[in-house]
Length: 68
Image 1 (cartoon, rainbow, N blue to C red):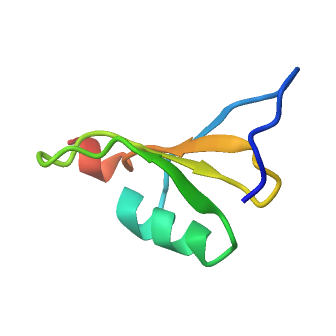
Image 2: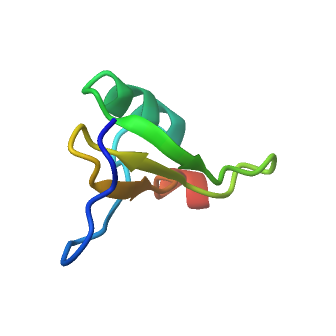
């Protein structure tokens, strides 16, 4: 994984529309993203901060169905 970029940047939050947050994390790992920080809690809340191959950070939130 590259180092997180410095300077001007955008931070994205991804909320899956099909499947769960955890499914989306695994899908993104298959596309060469890596887990940067895991903020998931035992009760199912939380998010995962990930990095793309260039080191840009983004978060994967719970899907709308997981928030009900």
